[in-house]
Length: 113
Image 1 (cartoon, helix red, strand yellow):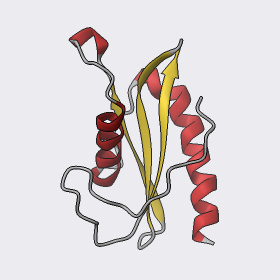
Image 2 (cartoon, helix red, strand yellow; image 1 turned 180 degrees about the vertical axis):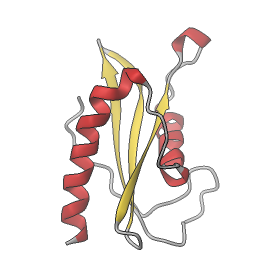
Image 3 (cartoon, helix red, strand yellow; image 1 turned 45 degrees about the vertical axis):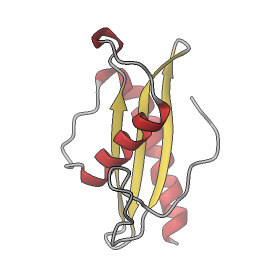
Image 4 (cartoon, one colour; image 1 turned 60 degrees about the horizontal axis):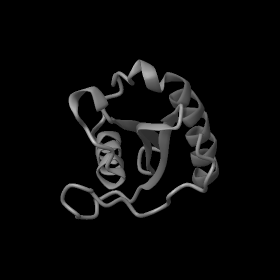
């Protein structure tokens, strides 16, 4: 697991490049297993609602995908912005997702206070 400091930026929609109306804080993490990058997890905090949502991106090597860190991160952030609370995280991400969820919960608790 990547234990580096989180990325903290004002929320910019990665697809349009425009700043969202509600300022948000983004936390991201690569998902790596057996020295292979599987994708990204991203949490977006929405201060107006005092909550955060998690999105993901997954590299599908079997379909010919090539790992692109910038695009993967953008997709994960976009999904976190637009996520439905019932989003299904891939089974291969479950262990990392649970740890990331706890990390985000603790991090955003500090941000909100």
